[in-house]
Image 1 (tube, rainbow, N blue to C red):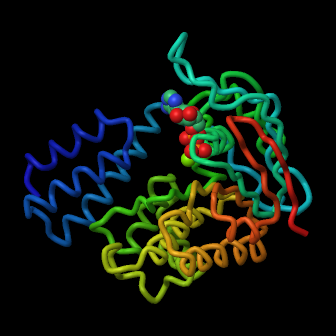
Image 2 (cartoon, rainbow, N blue to C red):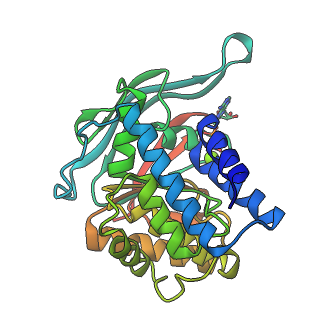
Length: 303
Ligand SMILES: Nc1ncnc2c1ncn2[C@@H]1O[C@H](COP(=O)(O)OP(=O)(O)O)[C@@H](O)[C@H]1O
Ligand SMILES: [Mg+2]
C-alpha cells in the first residue's frame, strides 16, 4: 500500500458519514485495481477501526450507556412505543409512513412485524432501533426514553445494546467470515482484547465456526446471513433487530436462520424483533404485529 492509497482511504472515510459504505467502497476499488495483498487487508481493517475510534473520541461520545446485560427476564417489556407518527418530506410531497403506533415488545421473545411492501415495517424498525426518530411520539428502551436522545447517545446505545441484521447481509466481500465479525466488533468500539474469542464464539453460535475462514462469495446465502447474525451478536446485545432477514433465502435456509434466532433467545434471553412477509416464518415467532398503511391493524400471539 503506498501513500496515495492511504490518502484516498483517509479522505473518503472522513468525508463519508457512512463508515461501512466508504470502507466497502475503498476495499472494492482496491480489489478492482489489483492493488490488494493479504497484509493490506489486515492493515486496512486496523486502520479503519483506529480512525473510527479516534474520530468518535474527538467527538466526545464517551457516554456511559452500557446497559445492565444481566437483566433479561422474559415477560417484561424491553421496548415501548407510544403515539408514534413518522412523516417523510414536507407539504404536498409528504408521506405519512406511520401513524398512531402503540406497541410493547416482550423481552426474551421473537416478535415479527408483518405487512405488505410499503406498509411501514422498515420505518418502524428504524425507529425502534434508534436509527431514526419519529415525527411524534415516544420510544422507551429498557425504560429509558430514546426519543429525544442526541445522535451520539443513540449511536452509543446501539453499539452497546443493539445488533442489526439486514436483508442483503452487508458483509465486506474481501474479508473472511471471521474477519467480518471481528471487524464489526472493532467498529462497535470493543476493546481489542477478547475480540478473537468473542468473534469465534458468535460464529459458533450460528454454526459457522468451521467455515469462518471462507469469504462471503464462498458461502451460501443462508451461511452469509448466519455470518451477518454472528457479527450482529458478537458484542452480546440485548436486542437484535432484523429487517427481512430471510427475504433473500430459500425456505430451507430461511428456516435455518429462524432456528439460529430461536436458539439465541433460548440460550441468552436475547430479544429479537424482525420483519417478514413470509407466512411460514410468521408461525415460528412468538408475537406478530400486522401493519397496514402505517398503522397496526392486528396483534397475535402464537402460544
Ligand atoms: N426516506 C424516505 N423518504 C420518503 N418516503 C419514505 C422514506 N422511507 C420510507 N418511505 C415511505 O414510507 C412508507 C413505508 O416504507 P417502509 O417503512 O420502507 O415500508 P416496508 O418496509 O413495509 O416496505 C412507504 O410509502 C415509503 O415509500
Ligand atoms: Mg422494508
